[in-house]
Length: 105
Image (cartoon, rainbow, N blue to C red; front, top):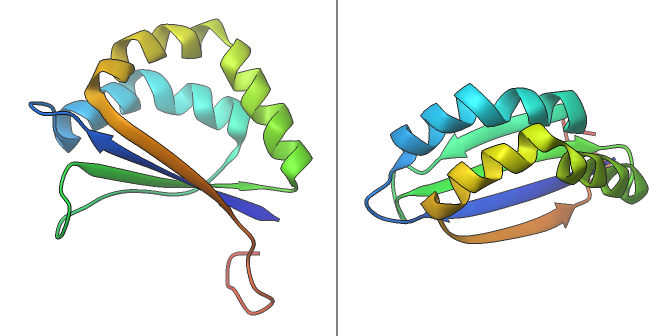
């Protein structure tokens, strides 16, 4: 298993409430249908504010590549992206490999 950590810094004047309302209404179902294993979705409360972090689990790098390609090809996702992209200042992602003793494996 691998875990993808995706981090977004939101532009001002948008904050987590506006972003999450749009994501919950339009983006979440599409991602769940295609990506499958949502491990967690978070916003910062202390430290650098207006940050979103989400974690997705995949069976392998190839599984991730296949699922991300399917998501990118979905017209519902493309429509959602046109609305959400203006809210995002920057994005980063990392692929993480759980240790043998990690509760997420």
